[in-house]
Amino acid sequence: MRETGSIYRISDIEKDERPRERLLREGPAALSNAELLAILLRAGTERENAIDLAGHILIEFDGLGGLQRISVAELTAIHGIGEAKACQIKAAIELGYRLATLMPEEKPVISSPEVVANMFMLELGAKVQENLWVLILDMKNKLIAKDELYVGSLNASTVRIGELFRGAIQRHAASIILIHNHPSGDPTPSAEDLAMTRAAVQAGKLLDIAVLDHIVIGQGRYQSIKTLQGSLFPG
Image 1 (cartoon, rainbow, N blue to C red):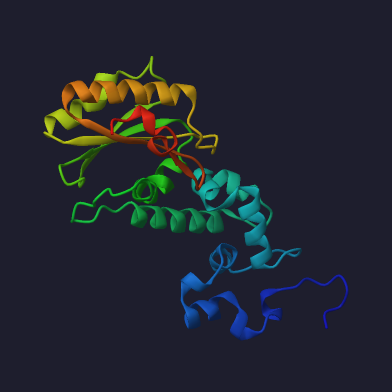
Image 2: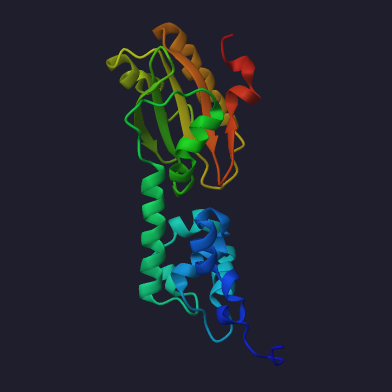
């Protein structure tokens, strides 16, 4: 039994249950975020073991999405995180981000709002300003291209609705999907989001390019305006 006041360290855990040993035995998917981060940290502090320190970091920065957004300087402000550890963490997260955003050679089929969210939530959810993208699709709802059009405060008066369709017209596309983020983390569509969607749908009718949906991305969550406000879209 540990003495009162002593620090519970990784070495106090049964060897088979330590994060590195579990990863070797069961694979990385079996580990929690804190355990995976603890492997990168390798050691904790005089007050926390590596797993506890990892949990502290995840709470401090609101999970993995927060870790992606913060700087090395912000990480090193945590006791026990030096520049080398901070760089290792940022490098690991960047590798994961790059892997998640790789486009397969086969054009993906956009079959649901969930597919869109799974493809772009990690990237858009990390943005500190609003970003508006247009996904351009062919007749079979396969993704042709992604146009990143606007950064900053987005509403129907600042976004040029015709600009949303430029890429689709150039590529002779059949339809588009709008997607943008809410840096607040709450994906609930605003009145401005609905107004922009309504204007885009009406313009799409004139151009014979359907607006299939408008997806709003938050922190780990998303909302489909078509799901919430189906009356905005043609049947």
